[in-house]
Image (cartoon, rainbow, N blue to C red; front, side, top):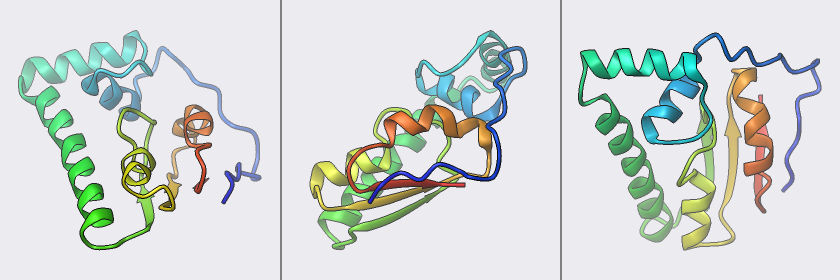
Length: 131
């Protein structure tokens, strides 16, 4: 399976001065795909909800546990990750293919801003990305 880029026009430019939900979430996870505007909003959220960072990290841990269970215990070998967002640690393909290298994953997201960084990370074998 190979990655297929969108064919419906040019990708939008990233405006680092405008916060973006995917980058705010990435910051909450301790990732590196964010800018000052994203950090400022995330810090406001964390100031109002101190557990926000923990919630984001626990959400990611649950995803990993669920994928591992589905591969190892339920025999699932094909995944569709809808609303995949920015790639971060423990992406679905990393977790699934660690258990079974033949697992196949399709990442889907309708937000064109989350696609450019995902192009390189999701070039793993047996993965595709669509918009």
